[in-house]
Image (cartoon, rainbow over all chains, first blue to last red; front, side):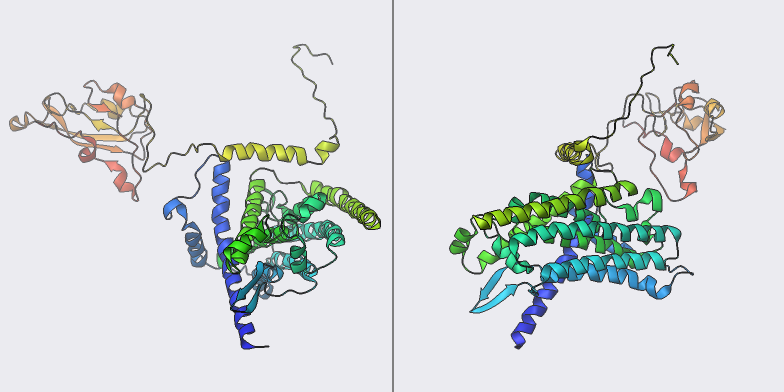
Length: 345
Length: 165
């Protein structure tokens, strides 16, 4: 292992981390702006031009707030909770391929932190670990509302992970690989997986909404029933971490959806573009396209949030177990039959 | 039982059909509705920079009027204070000296005239009670402040600017 490898990975990780935090920061701003526009309002516009410094002001406010740890809380776990939520949210970006290999002076630099051959499994592991942050925080608060919310979050994540996994299996039947890099490479140009797996994508998307605790599945933090949900007792930057982790999760699941189903950094006519703009600009345009797709997904997340009312708990469970899981299984069977028939003839 | 008024409407709650149970058609329709609002003009008025036009019968901050020659109309009769349901108005009357003849219209005038803007309910009864047409609620919105004492407006804030000769 040479030193250049270490340096370029270190740089990549740092840049990714910075970008993730930046996007999460501005997601809070975008969320408020989108909400405002959807409701014929203007949204935050006081801090700086068009209110673009609003996230900074919010961050400053979070840092300045008094930090309260309830007397009867389990102190150690109370502090671990937000950290764990943040950690699990951040490490998901490691396996996502952000662009084609860069060729800098004969040296090939992959725009992916690590291309492990079970990338999809890794993502699932990380996403399911995310709920521990919520559970630990909810339990350690020693508050009934927080505990109820933590239980809800755990139930919801477990239920929807099943359907999510099943919808992915149909995709894996098509791609024959668990490596995200290879999955993206197979979708070169226009051959995006969503064209072959529309139902699978729909199920996957609905499940990502549930996994990220976003509306209409934001039962764990519904203000009307559970005050603030699992972060009722949190204040200051610990609360900030939870809110931040939610936005990072949204970014990561948007990236995963774009990668698995919408061709990642692939776009129609990419070969023509790459031949005309050179070996460095070509992959970077691909990366920009990937980010564009991610932003579209983030916008969609927000658009849905401000449209659909929250599901009731029994409706949530009905939809998950009686709706999505049978559909996902049917999707696997149909995909399997079609693949078998196509391979035969 | 039979309805006497014939206004009774029986609502039946049908179980959801398959398409409705899928939620998706309704969700897509809802997304369309919200998206149509995305491109609508916002109805916000950016208040400190932009002000909305008041209606013609708007009642805002009080002003004590002057007559055509620039003399204060108020004669400190106290009818406004008496009519005020919130007891927001107080005044102290004084007698006009000969050299103050072009300052005040009548021989008696209000040396001190105070309205407590925290008490005032902007009902406009003072305006109606005034026999001299001296007080009108035709000003802007009363600005906010930090201290209670700063909400007691004296003549310095209430009296109209003197006429320009």
